[in-house]
Each structure stands twice: as structure tokens, then as C-alpha cells.
Image (cartoon, rainbow, N blue to C red):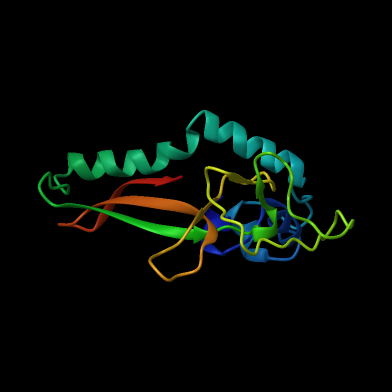
Length: 167
């Protein structure tokens, strides 16, 4: 998951395909050239299982505990920062919760969806692509996009991220 985030790989499926070609990924995962790549479905299922058991949080927590033991954390100067991470989902996948998208043709693979004049919000619509992304915009006058929100808790004296969450 770290490689996906750092190298802006848009999906687990694409990552599994690139694992066959990108030697850096294989080196990071301690895989030799003869080992087969991950199966995309197995990779996705294992990711969900890791997230359920919060295993991904253990290494960062250990770093923060070690920094605290060495007196590197200040209890006085913290900042919370947030950002929007654009999801790799099309706005066409943001459909009404009642299941009736405004469609003017019969092609289910790439329908010509017309949302003109229709108010879309997270209360009335959902991402049908299975992603947990939500419709958000950065400010007034900006376009709305399907995004995930990232929140970081930063200790300012030494610049250490003490907690990170994606919603």
C-alpha cells in the first residue's frame, strides 16, 4: 500500500501488473525475478483483512513511541493538516442511491449519462464503483471531484507526523 501511495499507482490491479515490470517494486517487497506477481483479487482481499486488524498502524506507532521515549515530542505544538486525494473513479460512477441514473442510451459499459440540472450530493448519490470516495471540492467556485480525505497530526517542534488517517 505504501508503494501504491508513493508512486501514484491508481489501483491494486495496475500495481499487480506493474509488479512484473518495475524492479524497484520487486526490490522493496524482497521478491526475486522468478517469483510470480500478486493476484489482484487476492491482494485486494488481503488489504481489506489488514485494514480490519489495523496491522498497518503498528510500524508508525512504534516510531512515535520511540520518539516520545527520547523526548522528541512536544505536547504544546501540534497541527492538524488535511488534503483531498483524488479517487481513480469517474464521475459517471457517482449514481443516485435509488439506482436510476439519468441515461439516454442502452450501452451499460459506457453510458451517456447527463447530470445537467440535477443536484448531486453525498446524501443522494453514492460511488457505484465500490470505492469509499465522496464528492468534495476544495473551495467555493471549484469543481467537485470524487476524493478521499487524508488527515495528518503533526508535532511541530521536530516535524514528526504522529497520526495519519484516510477517510
